[in-house]
Image (tube, rainbow, N blue to C red):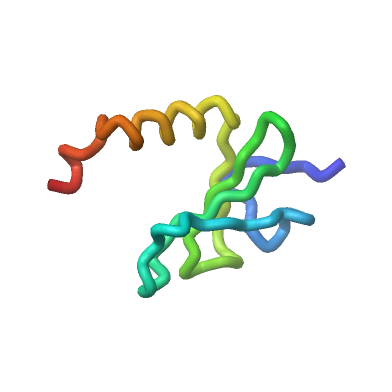
Length: 78
């Protein structure tokens, strides 16, 4: 079993299948996500695919996506 901790290099995440939103822009400034197991999700900057990965509980990612969908963070961008 791989030892995964927050701040690990994304290149070290064995078997991670990185995905980004279909709504991503063409400039490549995107966040990519990879499900590591049933309870853990990794995030990385698409411009630095070998860089740092942030590791979150899947429940936290679900809460963030839900908040984004309802516009809870719209005040941050306009």
